[in-house]
Structures are given as structure tokens and as C-alpha cells.
Length: 138
Image (cartoon, rainbow, N blue to C red; front, side):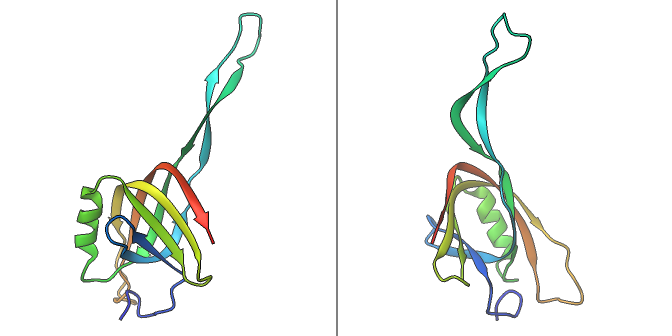
């Protein structure tokens, strides 16, 4: 039986470096904001602050909410938090080949509230800090 009793998920979160381990079935992803670095470049003759781009981009923090197997949830959270940077992938099953890959540190793991109406559904929200870029391939 899968984490929510349904074998037709739209996406799965996997660790890649750790042997392509499936962490859980993705329910929701809050995507990060891409920010371009800037440096103040105001000269004394200007009445306004002026900036130039540094050419460095920062990928902001983001989260993924997953269904996970009840037997592995607490083990996975401890294991994820204890790891250094890893490569993760979100593989979208409905397209067959679309994959979002990213290097990240896991910054938080929150086990979501349990619902008596759906006792087989166990969810957790994982926070990520991307290190480098993320790539969407299909």
C-alpha cells in the first residue's frame, strides 16, 4: 500500500546521491524566488541611489509537502536533517519524463497534523535551501 492508499501520484521526491531513495509522494511544492544580486554604485553627483547587477543569482528557500510511508517517516526526517548537501529530484509521473533536479540542504522537517478521517495519510513538509541552481528537464 502506498502512503495515501493510491498508486497514481503525480510526483515523487527522490534523493539522488543516496542511491535514488524515494522520500515520499509530493502533494504540494512552494517554489523559490530567484534573486539577482546587486551592489550600490551611487556617485556623489547623483541625488538617488544607483545599483548595478553582480551577475550572481540566489535561489530562495522553498518547501515540499509529501505523503510518506508510516513506517519510515521519523527515520527519514532524522536522516535528511543529518545529511550535508544532497541532490534531490522531483519526478513527475504524469508526463513520464519531466524532472526538477536541485542541490539543497534540508533546513526543516515538520510532521503535519494527523487526520482521524484519513488515518492512512501521513504528511510532512520539508524545507530546502538550494545551493546552486535548479534544473527542469523533460
